Length: 211
Ligand code: ATP
Image 1 (cartoon, rainbow, N blue to C red):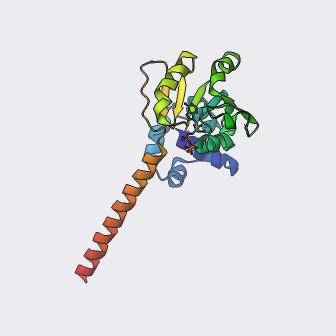
Image 2 (cartoon, rainbow, N blue to C red):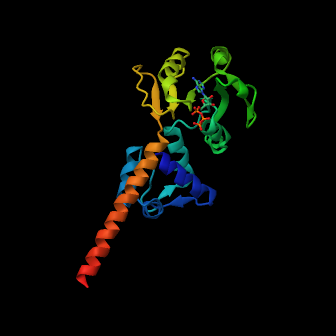
Image 3 (cartoon, helix red, strand yellow):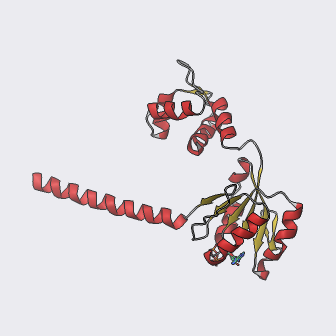
């Protein structure tokens, strides 16, 4: 769904009003039948002979993804990664607003990132009492992540976007965690590169032997 949302947003920016499953399939590199199946699962937005109304589909998928409401995010750990997230303006376009930044390093106290001041972690409870927090992003070292996650849950925060190098598994059924491990993704890329290289080597060897 997020991928459909992203592509449909691009189509809207390009002024495209409607699109067939075939056209969308070429653009997204997914089969047209897969597209029809995916979108039918979410309420059959298409019309025979017309295709999909891009605006309508974009809004419906946005609604399914919960994007019609604003989400307030706090970031804990304002190092390089935390600052990069805080500086990334595109999240706001989807309604994800960075409203609080927290760290334990006193040198960062009061430092502003895109208009948001860094607060000390000791101020978290006070901040939470006066501000609605929907999501906490963890971009601090892994050794404190578990304990901090528990503290966040106790404050009523129900969604954790975890970049710390640990798989957080909270037992609370009403808390959702999205573990994002950028280095896992990079290692996967490295593995795929290696595999591609080997495939190419085998092909070249086969070509030479066939000559
Ligand atoms: P990055 O990994 O983002 O490049 P870094 O290398 O400067 O940052 P890290 O050790 O990964 O440093 O820590 C990231 C940030 O998290 C730092 O600003 C650090 O002060 C902060 N930090 C460390 N421990 C905690 C904690 N328990 N709670 C909140 N912030 C923390």
